[in-house]
Length: 439
Image (cartoon, rainbow, N blue to C red):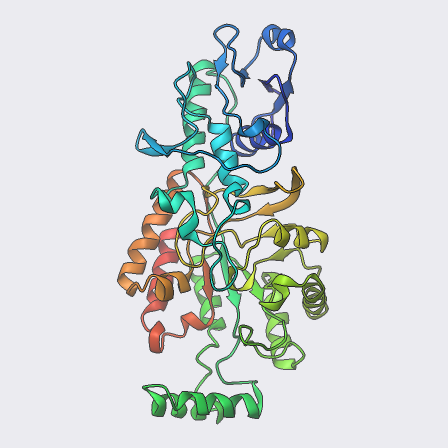
């Protein structure tokens, strides 16, 4: 929400990059109306709040000396050195007279645009950009929403100069999300899949127990262990929060093991949840590299829910920039929840706030809103090998970071990891403690 008290930003060259990041920081995050000028005389004559983003200071106006990033064209290797200031990492630091000792706009743009993901790097086994390749992981600040902290510094600078500036910082928000990769462990899978699953379980150390579990579920004696939906609904009722659900409806494959979306059981489950909650597409592993397959899956979900599909989160966090987001935009998705790492907790884009995707390949801002996630259940248990107690401490540290900057806490959880059995025993308590801490 903007005001009728604009802040004027001057630069001798007003690029799309500069307009985008200035709008994000000043308008989206501080709720200020922003105007731009490249006219020196207009800027000097302006008697309201103003920022000079150039290499030449005119008088005693707020002055931020720029790096070259926002004035460049194309994607170039960046020489970045991270240093620490006020307990936070910064880069694009300079020795020039400036109201901050680094270029907050260039540094924020580098992280928010995911500039480094366009540069040469080594992909992981699932053709993903690895957390370990990132500047934030290498320089040990992945756990910090640095952009949000930098913006707080900027707001302090602005208010010292313009005490009546109507800055309004956003409020902390919690968005619960679930990915439904495997709706049921045993039920509704048919004879062949259950037979194959039984044979596979014979190789498991607890083969006898797992086979007995499968038989008891299929015989109707015990509930399906992955059918944790009522527990989720009860928890949401108890703590008064709502959730977003992302459904995998793709065809069965090596990495896509859900039950068939053509079956009545899965359709009824999706319909029953879509009646009360926000629902989005969870593109299959195959759909990540095929817009046509994704379009078919979106049509399938829309037919089941009788609602337009506008939200997405990639299965296996298969985010390939800019192609993934270009495809989502082409297909009418306007909100995505994939921005995070599968192997590490933290802030992939350096922020705990939502933002518009900037397409570096086309050099333009877009209408796709990105909601980053800071933590995922599988990351904690599978990649980081944390115990439930260690996972709880990690989650609480992230929540504290996000609340401190009034960001958005958007964790990923799965119905099957709430089964409280086998390797997931004790993780229901982790999830419930996370909810208590988050709300």
